[in-house]
Image (cartoon, rainbow, N blue to C red; front, side, top):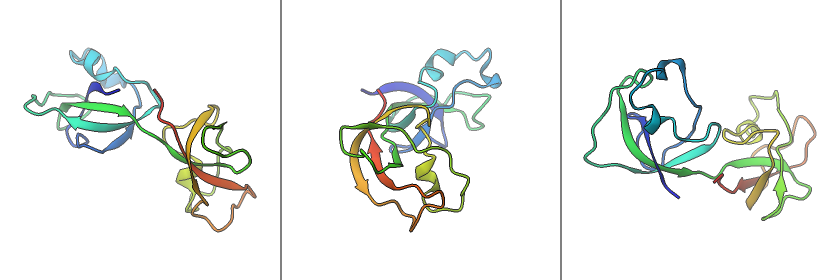
Length: 148
């Protein structure tokens, strides 16, 4: 279900994905707070439409102002332990990884999915992009269902 919010003008393009980080100190006293701070912190969203013929509004966080956009929760792609990784099952991420140069690092620590949370697998995508895991983990790349 689509939700109306305000997003930085430079980020306001259809298909753009972002993880909502919540309020900053610069948001204090802003007249647009209720339209801008209406998403769930830590959730990954995708812009589904940029509202046409809307005004660009001044913003203390975004140097080029904000625009009205429609967003929906977005699916997260991640590496998870291979055991029990099948469509429809729930799983958690394997845990933090210090190997930032690994081609799988962004999938092992994906934006929009917490280590302590359980996530439902929408689709199994297959083998991760790395040749072997430096931590000895057996991993499978999956797509989680979007948070509602």
